[in-house]
Length: 401
Ligand code: LMR
Image (cartoon, rainbow, N blue to C red; front, side, top):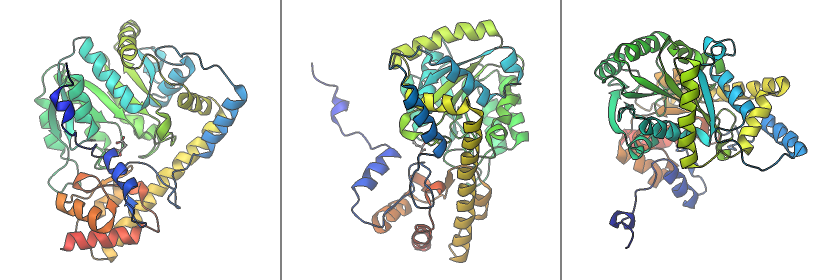
């Protein structure tokens, strides 16, 4: 027997990571990568943040064992993550109606969530925002879900389509899975306000839907607790949901693949029983999680001094991204690049969706060596003083032509 025919026809490159491969192969010295969502500092470097370096130094001194972790990860890490998502004083913590499993990155958490739901008899329909992170449709459909879309942006592409979003969710069937992005929507940077999140939660309760919150950017929006406020607001009696955390961005631990899946059930007994099924999904995927990155997070969150230092470093990254947004909008305005740019200043997180055509995106790459994702998603965190003028002038050229 030979390989399936489709495995021998060329696969499309990944819409985000494939661009980084092309970028690396590009010999032009002035090339700029605004495709992948990775933070860079003012000098264009993705640093290991000092709190992480200090935690690694301590871990090295402790020289623990490389034996397997439990299937659901290290207990202290699981508790630390739960207390990051839900304040330690929250009812969910006191009632013990959540369980958290350590996973390889936020993507690992999403895949475990998808497998867990399907293996335990969930409805097979998952609702994703339109637009969304390009890996969402691939991940949920390969896991076995049929996909539906809820509109997310209005015609301007800069603001939330509140009525469209709520209307679509109202048409969902009981038990459908709804994927919501916790903060810093990828690719648009447009987040619902508190009142809209309340309305979304109302529809979820009314239609009896099952939310999965993709929480990859906690702390990159307004702050660690502020970004989690609306998720705490989901915690209504009886409402069960899952939260996929990632520590790629807020700890700058990209290549360590650190994340977690938190499941909130109606009561402690249901949560404990569901954990047994989560462990089956994990065992069948990667057996048990990798340790090093999670040990770093655990060390930082467990030490008051290191935690304070990390929160300041996180605030620094958040502040720099905000500054980049302002500088970008100002530069576009003073260069006279036509477009509705002002809303980008007030959006949150790493990304902005410029609303470019595929031809404009291709021209940016081919003529100007500037790499951006489809529809002109740019990583605002990737802009530097050195690259900003070239990016703005190239945008002017492709938009005005
Ligand atoms: C992105 O959207 O660029 C990041 O989340 C990185 C990734 O894995 O796609």
